[in-house]
Each structure stands twice: as C-alpha cells, then as structure tokens.
Amino acid sequence: MPFPDEAFTKRGVEVSAYRGTWGDEAATYLGLLQERVPGALSVDHIGSTSVPGLPAKDCLDLMVQVDALDEDAVTTAMASHGFRMRPEPWNHDEVTEGVSYRKLVFAGPPGGRAVNVHVRVAGGRNVRYALLFRDFLRADDAARDAWGEFKTRLAASVTDLMEYGQIKATAQPLLMRAAESWATRTGWTVALATRSDGPSVLGVDGCRAGWVGVLVAGTTAEALVAPAIKDLVETARTRQPDLAVVAVDIPIGLPDRGRRRADLQARRRLPAGRKSSVFPTPTRATALESTYAGATDASRATTDGKGISRQTFMIVPKILEVDGYVRSGPPVPVVEAHPEVSFAEIDPACVLPGKTTVDGAASRLQALRSVGLEPPAYDRGRGYATDDLLDACVVAFTAARYAAGTAYSLPDPPEVFSDGIPAAIWV
Image 1 (tube, rainbow, N blue to C red):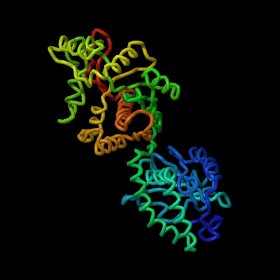
Image 2 (cartoon, helix red, strand yellow):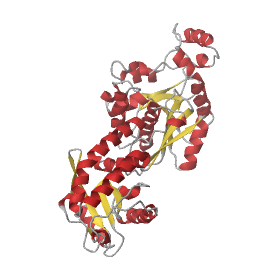
Image 3 (cartoon, rainbow, N blue to C red):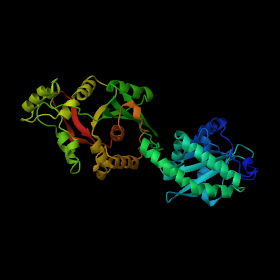
Image 4 (cartoon, helix red, strand yellow):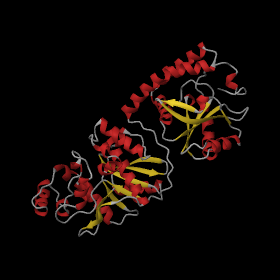
C-alpha cells in the first residue's frame, strides 16, 4: 500500500497513458541501487512503466536481485538514503506459481518520486515472472494493448487501490499463460544473476554460420557468432580482455593410428542410448584426405579396417581449422570439451532425451540453470540452432571448471600423439 505522501494515492486509482520519460527516470535509479543494496547482482526496470506504449500508474517498479537476502543489512542501507520499507505482509512474502518467496519492497524518500524497489533473491520463479511479464508485453503489441485496455477500464470502475490490485491479480495468470507460450515459441530465457569472481571463459560449438560461442563473464552470458574460430576468440577477447580459457566441442589432438582413449572413456560416461554422440576422432591421415573415398581408405589403413562416417567426414574441415589454430599458438588456452559428457556431469538424466527434441532442450536447460548458468536469449537469424547454443553454454561451464582448477581430463593424463598436442576431453 502507498504511504500518505505518495502523490498517486490522492486521486484514487489513476492509470495514465504511457510516458516516454518513465524509462529515463528509471535509468537514474539503476546504478544508484546497484551501489546501495548490499549483495546486489543486478537492477532492472520492471512492471508496466517498463513497457513502451502500456498505460500504467505513475509509479516506477525496479527490481534488485541479490545473492542472499540479508534483511537487516538491506533495510539499514536503504533507510540511510531515505527509502522506506513497505510494511504489508504481501510485500515481504509473495507466492509465485505456488511457491512462497521472501522479498522486501521499499518506497522512495518522502515527497520524492513514487517508486517501488523490489529486492528479490536471484534465481527464484518470482524473478523470472517479473522479467517475463515485461519482455512478453514489450514483444507482443496485441497483448500489450489488450492488457492496457483492461487496466484502464478497471481503474475507471474502482476507487480503491487495494480492490484494483486484487482484481488485476486474478486476471494476470491468463496473461502469463500467453507469456509462457510465447517464451516456449521464441526460446526466451531470463539471464540468471549470479555472482562470479572467476575470469571470463568462452564455450564454443560448431554451427551453420561457422561457430557460436557463449562468453561468460561475471553475471552475464553473451552469444557470439563468427565464421572462423580465430575471429570468434578475438571478438571475445575484445569484449573481455581477461578471457582465460576457450573450450570447444571439436577433437583436439589427432591420433596417428587407432582410436583415442579420450573418445572411448567419454562414451563410458554416457548412459545407454547416448554413447554414440561421442564419435571416433579421425586419424590425422584420414583428416588430410579431401574426398570421402580417400578418407575412407585412409581410415581403414590406420584403424584396423574401420571406415569413417559421412557425418564425421563433413566436420573434418572444422577439425582441421581448430587443429591449425591450436598449433599456431593462440593467446589463451584452448581445450576440448564434449557437450553431452559435460551435461551428464551435471545430471546424467538430462541427456536421455535427444538434444534436438523439446524434452531434450528443456532437460538440458534445467541442468544449466541448476549450476547458475542461464543461456543468452536465442536469436533465430544468426545461423545457429537452439541445441548449438545450449551446447556452447555447457562447454562454457566446463571452461569455467577448467579455469577454477576443478575440471578433470579423459584420460588423465592426456595422450600425446606425434603432433605433440595433449589429447583429452575435459569435464
């Protein structure tokens, strides 16, 4: 409920047309709250005033995500700058999708701009709910206009702010049902705010456009695309000069004869039905052949009669590209990781559905979220698929483990062939 001095309470329930100044006014609070709220990870403009074109009450809603809610510390810090904690029970505990979450809500200083500062713990469904509400209405003009018309009519029919809020709350689940369908259809995800003091890392997977990378730096994960692995790494280093490790889903270290122990051991890490996702790495003689017939003959000559699949042959150019890049002496360590093995390290059950299926994408997304990594939003027009993006994310997770010294290699120690490159899949 508002405090008596808050101007928007003195005229009953007033929903006004969208004001272009709301976004600018909210922006003045973002850095301020980031500094003032203990444990703040991120600050977002949320609610109706954050959606261009949407009618709203003239009260800004801002959300601060924290790693842990130290209520005394947050309240003391906010009070020292004039912010007042709203006392109502529903401003301390909120139920989202049947789950209760602890939070704090603050009003601005007396006589100042009407604001609600929501302090929530990162990772909760209540955080996701607030951001999905905003992003859906920003993306869907028809839904935005329908919701705005509903709010305007409701405000005209009630005189009590409490009644307005209660009626609106009963209708909002219908809006959010449409929002969830939109999220599934578009691949929308929310960037999970997490505190990380480690260096930046890059996870890389091959894609139609060449290479897709997920650059993880602190609390952010950004998707990068480039036709060449060298260009992708340089782009990442431009954005994050402290880039420490690049992990890539491609064989590094080609055998002279036979099969790599890395591939054999990695297959054993996967459940039945998923082992074939680790394909045999071609020998160097095989990879140097330019035709499928020549590669087949070379493979049979160097692997006791075993040929090479067309699928493997099609990615040989990428294998040779990474091989050349590693041998050139890149500016950061480049290691090999396998997405399915990395996912299985998080949760073996998450790799049971095929990765290109709806269930497979959902289970892998949940695995990433369980370790605090929220994928960047999927951008359909950049030349990669959803599974490519998720693979790059989990490879970035392994890169972070490597940088922290908690990853291990298959085999341990790595094999070394005549090329002198340690051959191992890092997990």
